Length: 331
Image (cartoon, rainbow, N blue to C red; front, side, top):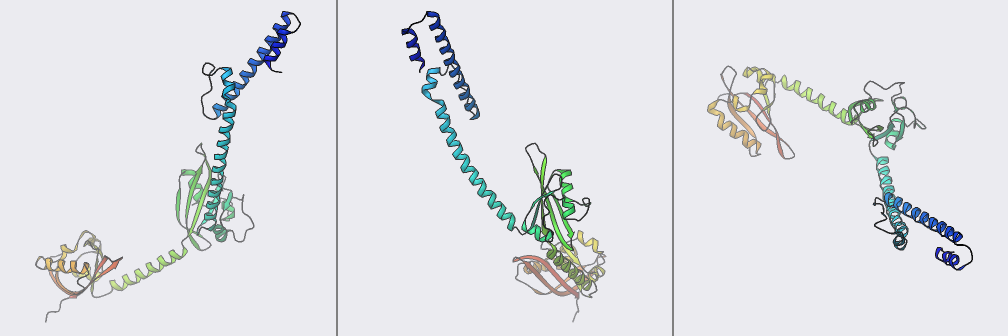
């Protein structure tokens, strides 16, 4: 029964005025409580949605019912939930895509928590480090990976936790293979490190190539240093890269002194322009072959030389000018 119908029944029926008045007051109080509840809950929903609450002077109780704010809020929540579902779906796809990338990455990836316990790892990490293990999740990284009761001295995880920033470790050796290790902290909204992502790049083949090249370089340096010809290499700007022992002996310079010199400093003034022009043509690819000039020793003595000049290229650009010279033999 509606409040209005109840009032009509009271006014038209039998009974004393006090009874009718008490009933009316009870109904009015019930109505006020209902409106107060509706307004409070509407304001609560509006606050959750980030909207300012409704003030009584802005919207009367009767208008509040006619406006149907609960219905409006329900429609708004339906739209919000639709957008939320769409966002969650996009996040799910993004997460699946990220997991697929991590799973197929060519580097080993291990995720550990702040207690150094392994939480996750990709297929490459299992292939590199955990091939013989059934499951290492939850185990301390130094136990499962390093095989020790405590972290090693150069532990990337401990450095990340101590510095709170990303760390790079080069040439970490594990089972006779070499790795570059990168550690990156993951922090919560309070700035606490909750996880550390460790990435292992196998550089064994590159390291072997570098060692081979270094060995070849040392071998050729030994050959050049024992050669009787004067061997000199220059950068395209004219600065010295290398001078063999024969060159240093002939000009009277120590090898460490050559770094402070450039090619024009060593050429006799009477031959400087022609010699530098020849080198420029070699750098431009227009000249390559026999070369004759006169150098000046540290003591100022003229040293007529002849031989061969060549230029090596990297990506079609001059990289190194090489002189192989000997004292000129006059006819």
